[in-house]
Image 1 (cartoon, rainbow, N blue to C red):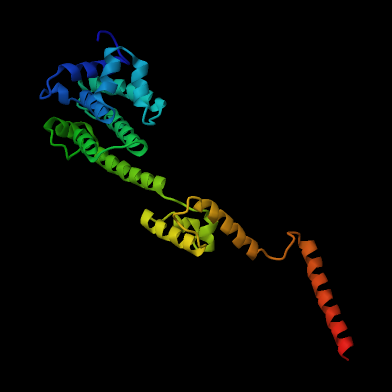
Image 2 (image 1 turned 120 degrees about the vertical axis):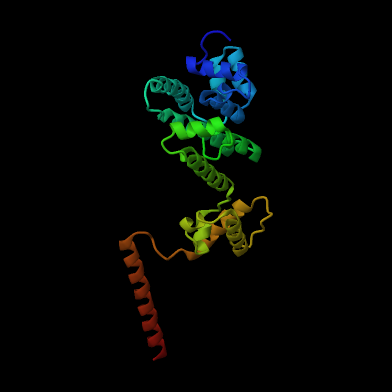
Length: 272
């Protein structure tokens, strides 16, 4: 495609991806690797077709389809331009540090994790994605050497990747945890803070105890409704004799005491 698509940097990167040989230096350059990482997350169709049809809106919509924010998509494109600007300035100096080198990779990792949490990723996709990141674990010499040359800390992206991966697993676990009515746990003697520390297996065991305590079959279709009703009945049986008003409660107590005294007096009169 002729002309500018998204911005000059992004256009240059896609053209290089399409035209350079896979074993070439340019194909393994940072901006082209960014395109390759995008393709792993989405697909070549999602990235290249909008470029070929010169439809920027479709590309942006493709990048948010897994839940990644549009504001971050726009920032990602701007960061690509800023990365190239810094690189051009660094050519005439001894300085090689480029802060956008880290920022852009973190955004790409966030895109991947967003897909993992909201949709699905297979292990092969995660491994392929990680192999292209600029980490000390890379087996690609150009990626490995560039990381040591440009990053202030060569482990930054590696650490960020595994931290986000671990966090995503916690989010996924929380999403499939089946929490019951908070009151049901209180009745069983558990605080909600404690319940939230349990893993799925431990939580299922506690839930089984809850249903067993209230004599509810776990295969019942309306078990949640039955649990709600059972809790209501339990609380009604435990309700104290009180009006909720302190003054009225005092009068009630005095009335009860007076009645007991009168009954005692009458009983004494009748007996003696």
